[in-house]
Image (cartoon, rainbow, N blue to C red; front, side):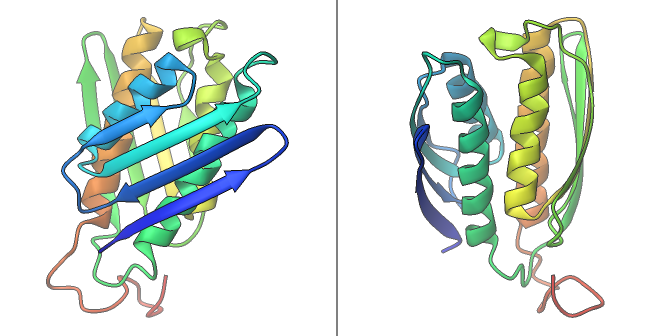
Length: 193
């Protein structure tokens, strides 16, 4: 089973993520940040992975440490579940509309963490999460999961843009990590990811 359970505790947060890449989209999320809970549930549901996220953080300070550390632990869990990548499709490109917004996620589960993010939120950001922190969340996932992602989004409504991003990333991740029955090794000319 392609699954992982990762727990990380720091002086700022305590985060546990359990996931199963071959799930049904069943999600249980409690980060103390309702909008992040909604986005992670959307990500898991559209990524067709079973996902449990529990986080306690220094929210009286602000939400930065919790959002960042959930991204770190989620990325670490993804790396563990993907393993050596033998037999996966590796690449995917998905566009998701949501009303006036459109988001696109192109990803390579190739062992190198990198993020290119093009999209602008209002300074307040969606759901009381500063707009620049959404990009940082995906950066934390990509670096720790060793995934290259190009994420683009436009729209007028922060909620719609953000939700389209999480859906697109989830669907792209599902497609890229899908088992390709014609691929018997690592999908790379190097023979390893």
